[in-house]
Every structure is written in C-alpha cells, then in structure tokens.
Image (cartoon, rainbow, N blue to C red; front, side, top):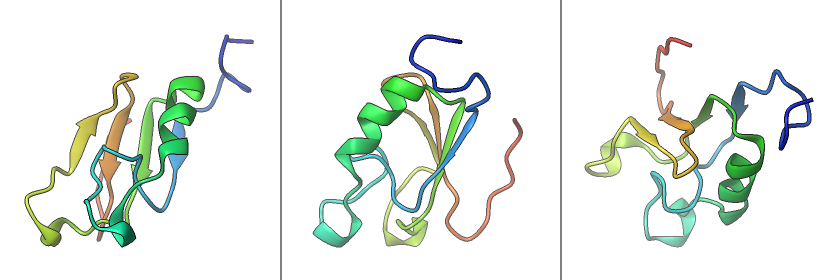
Length: 83
C-alpha cells in the first residue's frame, strides 16, 4: 500500500466544487472547500475534476495545479481530458 493512499488506484477525484483557493471565487456561493485541500494532500490523485464555478463568471483558468502537484480541471459544461 502506498503511503497516504487508501488504495493505489485513486487516480481521479470528482467533486462538485473546487478546493478553496484553487479556481473558486470570493462570493460565498462559489467558494471552494478547505477540506478538499487536505484531501488532495493526503490522497494525492493524479487529477481532480470539479465544476460549479462557471468559466463565464470571469477570467478563470480551465486547468491549474494544486500545491500538492495534483492537476485540477474545471469541467464546467464539458471538458475532454487525457489521462
């Protein structure tokens, strides 16, 4: 078993909202969750897919990298990704 992982095949984490500070907005309805930051640090999946924050709300990036190195993808609408 890999350290910090419940299972060695946790490659994709799918959530509705983003991690706080990583693709969210300052208004309360569009803030991400702090708990996701710790979860990404602990599980360290290859990619986290989220939606909720629509890209047409402002100058938001479709993809970014979390402090843990996890690839974060805003899948609002639809998004084709390569794993």
